[in-house]
Amino acid sequence: MITRYKVLDTTFSSPSILNWLSQRETMWEDIDGQPLYGEVNDFLQRIVATEDEFTSLFYSPMKIQEYWDENGRIPKKVMTTSITNIPW
Image 1: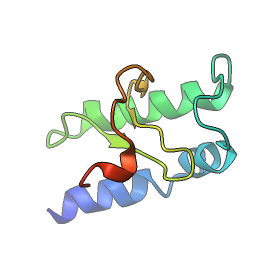
Image 2: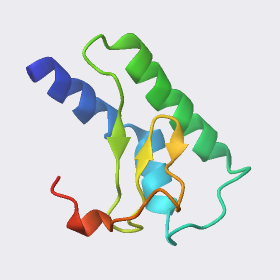
Image 3: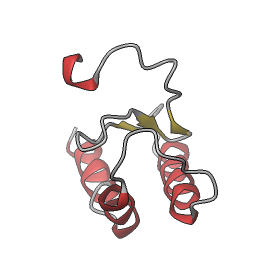
Image 4: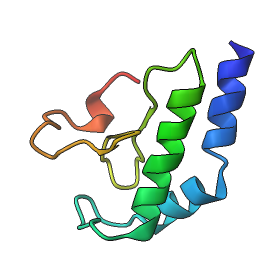
């Protein structure tokens, strides 16, 4: 359990992740072509690929209320419930 916590703590303390999250201002804004978008996805994919205990890694910044996993933003049409209503 401690190992999983450390991996998550390290992941979400990463300068790339913090920079990406701090730059996100508007829900569903166009992200295609943003260099950090690809870097963050690549970073999260490496975490999932190298950690045996992880099958996926997701996050949902309250500021923009979108849902993401290591493959990118979950499409708007799939997001049928506000993240504030999901029992995290």
